[in-house]
Image (cartoon, rainbow, N blue to C red):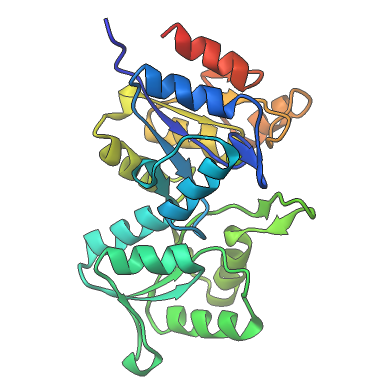
Length: 268
Ligand SMILES: [Mg+2]
């Protein structure tokens, strides 16, 4: 009897690190494809469009198509368009975020228009003092503040970098306004992904390396969670207990690496 399992699989620290594939990622995805198990690549990263994410995976040898990629940008744009169709949004972010806003039928805000319906902020590696001032003023003038993802630290090959949540914290401290948060652990991104997959939470296992985002997202959206302790990931055997306490939750399953995860998939 075929299983009715479906997976949401984190990218950074789970399937790749920088431009390097985590060992076993290609075989894991091949196995899911062979077994016809539905899944999406699920990322909090708002910077790249799904086509660019799929291309990056392909270059590493991981089979992926754009329609299998679900980003916080897509969910943020759908969240805003669902509440106010055709709304205007001042976007502080990169190409993937602007593309998603336009694809959802929203209007990119023009300074001449007064106050936009939304200030949407994601990772913006060209962020400046001037942008902070502009975004903050628009929020203080009444625009709703939407944050793509709460990540505070991004691992990179040159060391830790500030994440979208770090920039969001500056905006929050300027305005005193808490943003609507879209990415993991928020159930907004999770529910958006369940809809894309066409499944309910009970069928889904979220797979990732981060207790605070991936595993907490599972707990908050009612799906099963599986933590992988890849060497490239946030959680390691030595910090697992501390991260469990920080996240205030436990993973339903833990696998030591992607080979072990694939073995488990083979027995579903
Ligand atoms: Mg990760």
